[in-house]
Length: 163
Image (cartoon, rainbow, N blue to C red; front, side):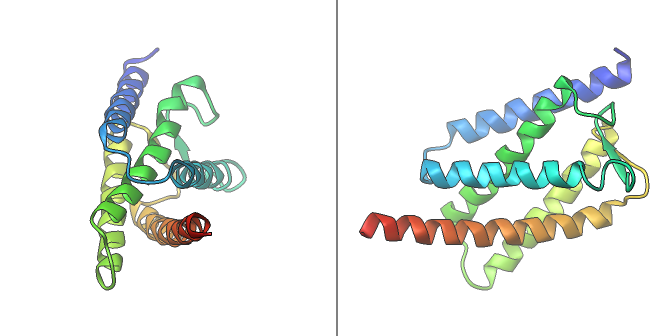
């Protein structure tokens, strides 16, 4: 394994372990079913995008060292559900409402874009015809979608609890 591949792998493992530790240490706040659905959705969106626009014929970018799925990508894929969980956990914990919702989404979208830029430094992402500014729009869209789905899930969960 090249030094480049080793640095990439260690970056992914450390971020995955840190995020997992953080998510695991937080007091349980969300219903397990809601958390599981949000985490699954975040992974599905990431995999769907990476394996549609990140592969031929579109092929705008590669993730990690190889352009195909390998075992070394498991920590990378693990980061998406964890970040989705942390996003929703803090959204709920901070009781984000009203005009603060767009601000919260904007802050997380900026954070996601900056984090992707850091990942680019460690060759987690190799952009071809893709730019970070496109990622910002994707993060903006996915954060809005995640927030809407979370609100629907919680409303449904509360209704089921009352009935």
